[in-house]
Image 1 (tube, rainbow, N blue to C red):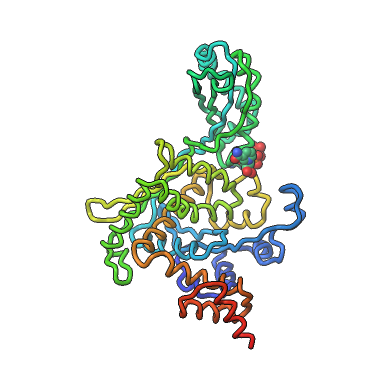
Image 2 (image 1 turned 60 degrees about the vertical axis):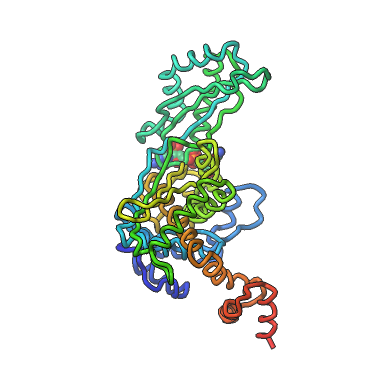
Length: 429
Ligand code: NDP
């Protein structure tokens, strides 16, 4: 893929977009057969994925364009029902690429498993007993899932925490063993759970306590990805707003989210607007990513902004985002769902680390898209214009009626289903 900058993609028909991507060798005929078929997720596959299946639930799959991350071009598949998200991410990516694109980093994929131990006669002695046998416990964990070590990963560290040490309740006091496992290119939940369960008997023996929970933590604080962008103010100029005004508006908006949880939650929802569609399209567990991201946003005791925006010494706007990112390029449904397989091909990432870098860059772009709109025209102008098509469809518009009615709704500044219904009736007369 030479470039993710595809002028005019927005105005093409779906058919033209597919043809163009095929001409850029982004699909094979086999891939296209999945994407264009009436049943991209075959019902038999779906029936083997979960229980009580009666059908599938399709979502629009759009392409986030213009992304340049660590010097590499990415066309990013995004599965989402909300209008303006894909357009906004692509718009910001276009601005950022004009100053070199995003830079991104990621740690190794080190996930955390937890083993809960209760009822120890002496919790400090129990802790010491575990730490004394750290090497043996790590070896035992690796023996329970040897293929990870063969790939260069595996259990690599453990820690012990004592929780509610002063508690008088028989239920409150506990020892928690954290097992840190490099799960390579897998999200690793099943791998970690297998390891944690296998350690339970030996942990009980060492501590004299009883093990209850043995499960992955969805706050993988050693599995982080971060992205950064630097934007000169002239690239931010919008309509009547100077670049400096837009930059300052973005920083004021960030400070609001940084200091107020009520704003932070909406600010962060906007970041997840970019992240979830990529996580979903790539067949990853978006509940896990959501849970970890919000926990990270509250890591210092107050729920706050996931991103940071500030002005550097040259007057540039600088944005940064760091999040735990428990995603994989293998495992779970990733190699089962045909569209998820195709999404990985479109993205052209070589590892879970690279995928996590792309995802945080999209989150950062999405955040700037929202803050830039909020700091200038307000969010409704662009959003409602795009939303007008959904409103027209909800009111019963079909075919060429959709464009016509959506345009009337915009022109008459009344983007409501009630108004659209009146127009549909008018059109049918
Ligand atoms: P899998 O159980 O599918 O394990 C990953 C698989 O990928 C293994 O079979 C492994 O093969 C294979 N693999 C191939 N290449 C690699 C590579 N380069 N690196 C690593 N593995 C490789 O999935 P996960 O353990 O990742 O678990 C993810 C699933 O667990 C998700 O569907 C998630 O929804 C679910 N889950 C989530 C929970 C949570 O979030 N709390 C709890 C429980 C489940 P091999 O076996 O040969 O090593």
